[in-house]
Image 1 (cartoon, rainbow, N blue to C red):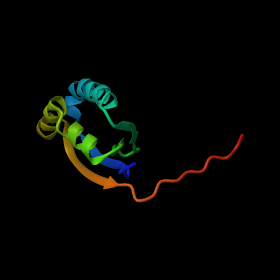
Image 2 (image 1 turned 90 degrees about the horizontal axis):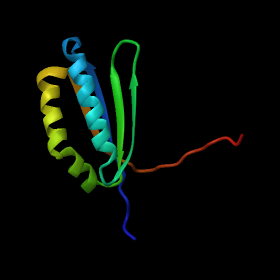
Image 3 (image 1 turned 120 degrees about the horizontal axis):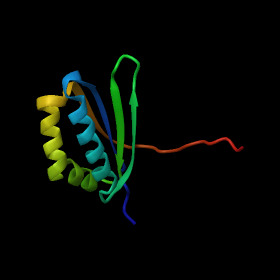
Image 4 (image 1 turned 90 degrees about the vertical axis):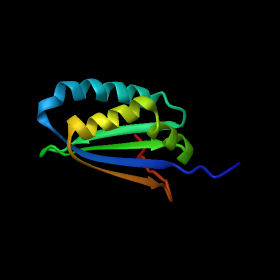
Length: 106
């Protein structure tokens, strides 16, 4: 069995207030599409008190991550994000070197 290389995308952004309704529609659609993509593992999103948004998206390989990055509707959403939705953003794509967890028993 080959090595699985988990790929994380950390997407930090701030929205422009004038297109929030249109953004919400697109965000819901893109979330739905992402969760149905082969290799999708998870997505978690958070909003800080001062308005910064952070989403952490996991795919099970570089190939499945690349397929999602290049999905036609995702490409369209990316362009709309630059044109209308985001005042700023930063994207960091990382591979996982180690992955371990702890959960206290109940």
